[in-house]
Image 1 (cartoon, rainbow, N blue to C red):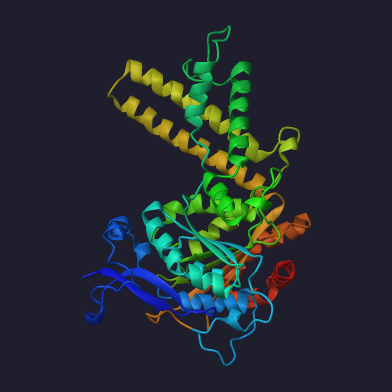
Image 2: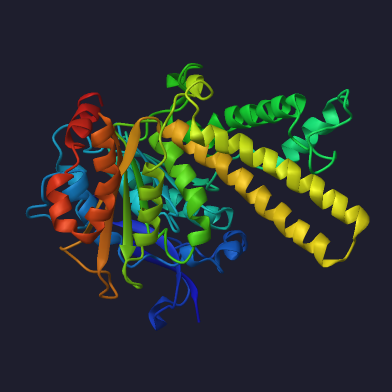
Length: 458
């Protein structure tokens, strides 16, 4: 039977006290005050987490932390020091990750992020709202350790983060609002509600569609509620300014966040784009996947390849340069208007027939295409002239506690210097997946300089 247990998880920066959902040993039945499940109030708080996969302690935390320490942060090896001895305890100056802002997406119990805070980073461990009480409890359990081991510079906050935009992508609703808020035109045709043949085709309708879509783009360019909450949590109030309320993020960590949820990947892609846009040349995503299924991350990386095929045109030139992505936004919105008007006509004249059913299917398809075209445009506007690049390699030093292979994928943006270079970088990720060792030699990532710069400023 599953129960709430407390475990000390090893890391290069000292052990992390971690409450998690697991099958107890006979001796672990019932926790003491340090493990602290004697509180009825806490048990009630944690009930929402009991059905969540993220409440289970990830098998590969120690291996992932060692990989980050050695290969990503490029910190000295832990010579003569056990995993339970914090590296910062032997530092002569300050903690090795001081000055770094890090987000862990799909953090589950929050163990890995807490460990990085012990090394001096300012970390947000984030997940769905059902896991927020569990993450917050583990953050609190380790507050003293974080403060002591990081020499007072490390910090960890537990936050809910819903992947994807906060602003609406419901093109149909915004068009309907525009129709209701505008007086009828002289030819008695609005965006939706006129004849299907003429909907969206008049000069007034075309202008209204462009007005609606431009307003939606501007809304989507603003930081999501989740990013705002994260920035407020990690940035000291005294250092916030009206001009720069979003700090640069240096690393985004994901551990098994791609497993079993491909329908959520477009929303995840939006969130990653939003985070990387705060620090386009200095932010890196590190994704760990236990290979329970072969090439778990492959399909997600193909999404990045597809993103690279979309060409950036500055918003100021979207009409004069005939940006195909912006044209797709307007065309798909007008197509939705036509489909909506057709559905209304069919509903009035042939309710319950196959014709009305076909119109409803077409309306649903047009609605999805309009939302997809809008997001595609916004993602490219956020990314600008950068391209997605990545490399994947096996974590050679260790397997998971279940003896499964772990693969690490390091993802970042690189500027496109020329058309030829852009084409090359767009093709590189697929090659990286086929030949990771060769790609590793080509795509080494220069984050050591950024790390040194942040440490010097700490």
